[in-house]
Length: 127
Image (cartoon, rainbow, N blue to C red):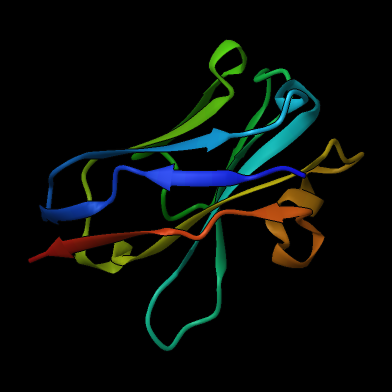
């Protein structure tokens, strides 16, 4: 069974940066595409970013492209989300998720297609 544990959330001022980490417990980390989602109070969970199993392809929600960077270290079973130029609208609980490689990146943007989830880490951006 795969377990995902996020860390790195916290309170930051607008314009600041945070780096989230997600540790994967299984031996097959390199077989999974890894995704980040977020959920703000009163809103649905939304896609933020994804990275293919090899790390060769990345995908972003338009509102974070150019500010956020997703990366992974397969040797450490860890995926990262570097968040720069944070805005109050980025305030949310951020979740790490994993799924097997899909034949279309669209599947990485859909919460319902994820196989495993972390419990989330809260990011609060103050204005």
